[in-house]
Image 1 (tube, each protein chain N blue to C red):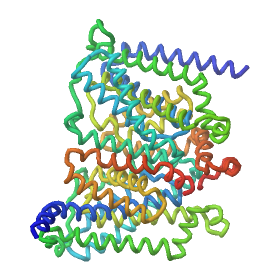
Image 2 (image 1 turned 30 degrees about the vertical axis):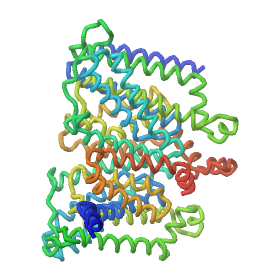
Image 3 (image 1 turned 180 degrees about the horizontal axis):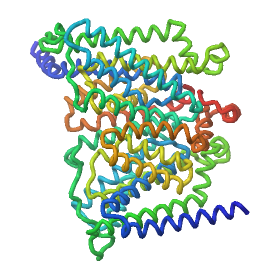
Image 4 (image 1 turned 60 degrees about the vertical axis):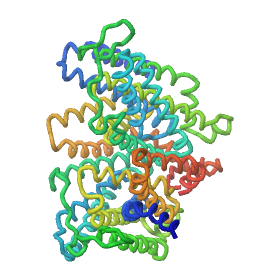
Length: 337
Length: 298
């Protein structure tokens, strides 16, 4: 009974938020509209982080890597090949998925905090590559002057901030809808099962490594598509868009949102990014100090957001070859081994 | 005779980058060994590790004035300050449940962000100059090449530091406790050693190592706004490559990274941006299973 009420309330809130987002560009000024479009792109990356961290149980600090791959692929295609949005989206998602597929062998056997470390190193290395590979990425100056996107063949190019924002909103809403549908299928069920009890899933004949690889590539494709949205929103990208602080902010947003919830990830990531943008506006120079203090305060205030991931982490840290021991350790909640 | 001459000529241009690579690698080793301690013993992914190095670097820039006394003072102050920062970090981490890695990583990231901002506020946004002792300012001849004297001395000092670290971890009671805490933290707790104290001690030691690296390495990786990020990245790659298994693995990984960053860039300038990436991918892909097993037991 109360579950039904909550579900309805949640649906109503989601519908209200969506309506608010659609009318937003006519209420706020152009600058805020552009900021909102960029926040949408980052929120979509947040969804891919939640997919890996909360649903598949692979905490990640490196989703900026496929995000950057998608963004740069989109910017290069946009300035040299085609200004059609659908083409750019597909190319960007493909680039993100390709990079994610290349990373799979590095992370698929690791669990827990090791994944966090490897993905962080990969994300940072990608930023280093972006800064040095001048012929393609423009180095630390980035790529500017990407032509305005045309959503589909035959449609006019999006010249206004409102148009670009609505394009970003449509893309993000479609992809988030697809993720939600996907999570309701068997694939989503198997992923969650792997997070909750990998040993049992393995014992019942599932190939956990294959599921995790699939989830990683799918999350990479989503992050790549988000990169394309970023290019449309900003018409300019530089390695600074994909730094380590972006990964950490997104992870914080996802943790605030409850780690495994797609809607929570959207709200959490948008909230964290909005706070950052606001802080850098009102406190130039001291924003990182306040932001750092907010990180610490949030971690103290929000122990519940981490619970779901914690059970997975403690389980994953236990050795796999002997299931009884793993079970026992998981229940004790011991992580050291 | 001529063949030998051709041989030396071919090696010759790469001697200096190779030597630089050793200095760079040893520096990265001293910095990364602190992160290995944090990760292996306390099981904390310390994203503020680069900040601890930066504290040492800024201390060196502020105190060094070209004399030996100032070097000793900078080393003492830098090591103490970074160790104190490590203890502070351990204190901040105490209320966060052990085991929630996400919270710990996010908390240390917040500390890194705030601390970096404080350093910039205190020392200014420009990268400060570092003055090495006057005696070491010149260059010496190495196999017919001029080479910065400071780097040569640094190689010796860092090698001594690495050996001392090895002896401490292998031979002293504190080192045994540290290794025991990696193997079986519950048993160590049963022996009457408080895990909280071990964590504080490990973070202090990690801070001291990073601080020492920061002071001594300031002329090589100087203090600046992106120092913390650079050092954290290099240390992470070392930890990933070294596999947390042994000091020897960490040392090998650090030297390999040093050579990649110097000799590799001299040999293959076109591929320079991808070399670190390729090295990590190659090692991880080749040893993924073995490393994963080791990580799980680590």
